[in-house]
Length: 47
Image 1 (tube, one colour):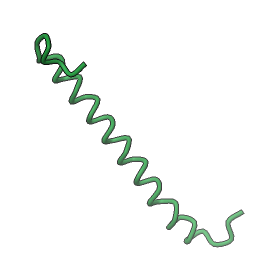
Image 2 (cartoon, rainbow, N blue to C red; image 1 turned 90 degrees about the vertical axis):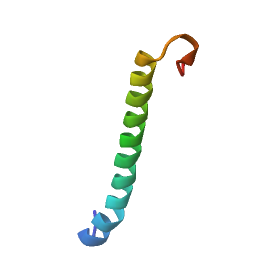
Image 3 (cartoon, rainbow, N blue to C red; image 1 turned 180 degrees about the vertical axis):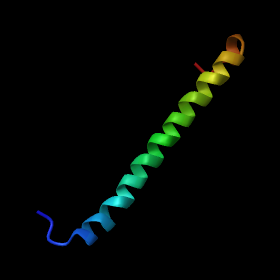
Image 4 (tube, helix red, strand yellow; image 1 turned 135 degrees about the vertical axis):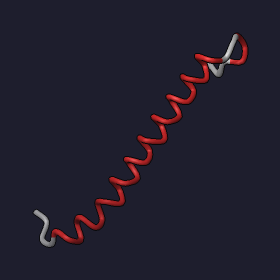
């Protein structure tokens, strides 16, 4: 059980922010590469 809720929330929110940013960056990267590969031809595709 958490004795003081304020320090707990203050310490956990930055971690949640980092997780959300990492998820956003990976989703943006995936969609960017997917869209590029739909446009690119042959050997120009990334994978």
